[in-house]
Image 1 (cartoon, rainbow, N blue to C red):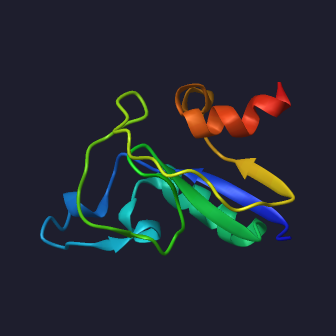
Image 2: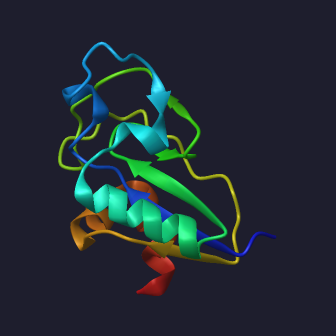
Length: 114
């Protein structure tokens, strides 16, 4: 069983704002804002594995491809989220409490902590 999974929230700033014709990119390269960059650095340094929690797609592996730009927030989810299917000894979520409150996968994962 893998050790620690770090869950990093997506960000509003995306690569397509600077390069609109870029097309599909890996999830780890799609988000460009300072919070995401810092969270990614933490996840890569301290986690055994990490995933991105996307408001549109749910849990993404860093190497999953995103087809292009989108504007979905945790306040206005899309409904195509995919569930987290991996099992880890420990999970670490980096992000605000509003994400946990609004995202059903976070609610399911963290309900045992309450």
